[in-house]
Amino acid sequence: MIKRFVIFFMMVCCLSIAAQQSPKREFRGAWMQCVNGVYLDKSPQQIREMLTEQLDMLELAGINAVFFQVRVEGDALYRSGLEPWSRYLTGTQGQAPSDGWDPLGWMVEECHERGMECHAWLNPYRAKTKGTTDLDRRHVAVRNPERVFAYGDLLIFNPALESNRIHTCLVVEDILRNYDVDGIHIDDYFYPYPEDGEEIPDEEIFMANPRGFRDIGDWRRDNVNLLIRNLHDIIREVKPLAKFGVSPFGIYRNSVNGRNNRSGSATSGLQNYDQLYADVLLWQREGLVDYTIPQIYWNVGNTVADYEVLCRWWNNYCNDRPLYIGQDIDRTVAGVDPNDSTRNQQCLKLDIQRSLSNVQGSCMWYAAALASDNGGYRSVLEQSYHRYPALQPLMKFIDAKAPKPARHPHFTSGRGRVYLEWDAPKAKKQEDMACQYVVYAFAPGEKIDTENPAKIVTVTPRSMGAGGHCEIVGERFGYTYVITTLDRLGNESKGVSVKL
Image (cartoon, rainbow, N blue to C red; front, side):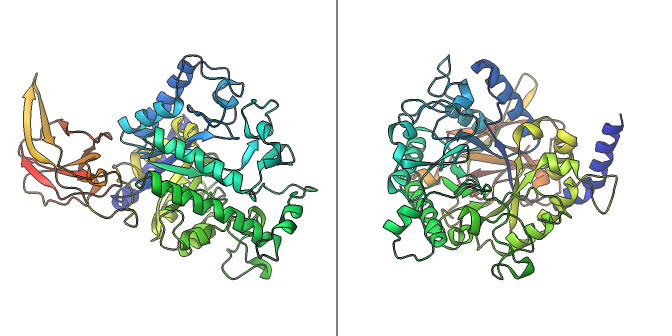
């Protein structure tokens, strides 16, 4: 009872302000992981049932993009001719699902049916994680052990080797050619997270081929830069409308106590640039990534890495590329709002995020925590911050042309129900095809304003099809309905209107 009251109180406090500030375009993502044993000891049918329930809850929470983890350690949660099936799916690396299930193909269909984007989330560098004891005979580390090195309990694809970069690009190309994914997503694991007493065993290869670099750190960063550039190029070549994004560790560099350079944040934690050898700002400046989601998992007031400090820093250093904030649900609901001890930090964090001009949304770690409403997090999104639908932020550097409007809007009726129907616009190129439709409703005498998300009746499922329909619910006679068309990148057409 106390928990329910606290959740209700939080929603009341957040509702009015968040509703007024609700943007029409906002990225609302969730990471759907396969690690931590979430699929183990379950049949494919049981996994599908679990994921279906999660997706239904994510849809209620207003989520419009899912990052589905498909490659953890040189393995696959999809049909791959390059790498073995993942042990995280079946318990044994190389063993396929018993009923022939293809998780990635299934997830793409389920997400698109709910109007969500589906991005394939993979790790380029881990070849074996801590808990893996047996590698399949087809695994790269078995067939070509010289291409990996040991670090702690891990095996790492050596970032210095061109053969590894080529292989990773082939994996991405395979996914893009065989699955209708909306993007390729990589996370925060580049060179391994440092461990006391462990040295990265690459000095010999650096000395043999420094490529003009005197400092091994600069050389390592260039190794990663080469892969990012290769991935960007293969994605643009194979599927030009697919998005490519990265979710780095939340700190780029530190600047406290005079350390490092002036572009660092007022933090004192692990650093992408100096310890993971990930020069995220360079990738943004050179247009090699389409969006960035720094994992700012700390709470406001954290002495090592303060959430607000880091949000403001990334806001200032996003280099004109879309920026979303990675949110940790469990840490957030366990924290206390320093301005109000009766609340956790969810509303505080989301208010900070929405106050920053270059931040265009957030991504929730992790999908299951959101679906199960940990700490009332999902309830607050449903009733407040995600009360209205949101379209994806635009990426005009990929495609800026809006599709043509829908055609022949009209009403039909049957069995006591009224439907609005329309036909798809004509298009010669794939990038101009209709992918979704947005339906707005305006009361008699009300000004037509399609920038107001509160007027959205529905955003249809992903279709690429010949048209669509929408059931009219409630007493809507005399209302004006406006239909707009969305292409694959969310460019919106002019509206066509019809009055009921």
